[in-house]
Image (tube, rainbow, N blue to C red; front, side, top):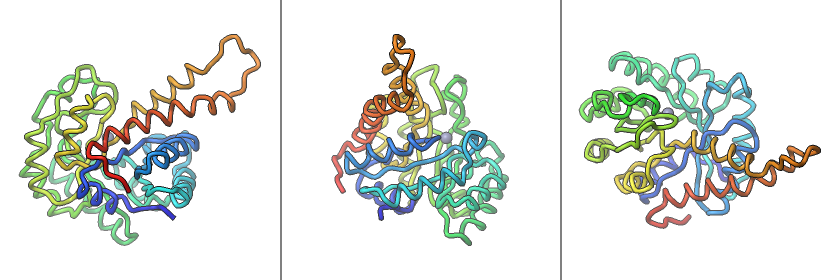
Length: 284
Ligand SMILES: [Zn+2]
C-alpha cells in the first residue's frame, strides 16, 4: 500500500529538499507509465487530472483506477485533481473520490478568491481532503504579458494573509511561470520565491514547469518549492514517442504494439524529470 496524501508528501519533500513531479494524465497508460518511472527511480510522484478532460474520460473513473494503481505501487504515489475553477467543479472532484484537489480562484479579485477558496475548504475538511489554492495568476505561456508582467505575480504580503484566512494546504504562486508552451524563455523571480518561502510554512507549488530551464527548476527545489506541475511536456513526450515508433511502411500495424514500443521513451522522460527534481539525491 503506497498511497500517500499530497500534503504529507509535499511536507516530506520540502523537509528533504526534493521536488515531486505532478504529472498530468488523461488515460490509463499515461498513469501507468508515470508510476512505473517513479518505481524504477524509487522516488514518489503525484498523478493529477485536469477537470477540463472530463469529456474525454469520466473523472470518477480515472480517480478510481489511479487510486488503485497508487495503492499497489512500490513507491509513494499521490492522486490529485488539478485546476478546479468553480465551487461545483471542486466539490464534484471530492464527490468523485479525489483525495486532494486544487481550487484555482486566481483570476478573481483577492477577496473573492479568499471567499471561494474558503468555501471549498469548508467542504473539503468534512471529507478530509487536501486543497491546493492559487494566488497571483499563472497565465498562458503564449501571452508575453502573462510571463513578464510582474503585476500578475504573487504578492508576499497577500500570500501570508490568504493562507491565514483560507487555511489552504499548499499554495501555487505566480513568479514568472505560465501554462503551456512559452513564447519566450521564462525567468523566475527567485527573490520573490525566496520571500514567499520564508513567509509561509505550507508547501509551495510551481505550475507551468514544462520548458522552464533545468537550472531554474533545480534552484526552485533548493529554495524549498516541492510540487512541480508537468502537463505540456509529458503530453509532448508521449506524442513524440508514438511518432518516432510509427512505421509508415507498415499498413497492418498494431496500436497496442506501438504503445508498448513507445512506453520506454515515455518512461525515460518521467525518469529525467524525477532526477532533475532531485538535485540533492534524496532516496526513500
Ligand atoms: Zn496550472
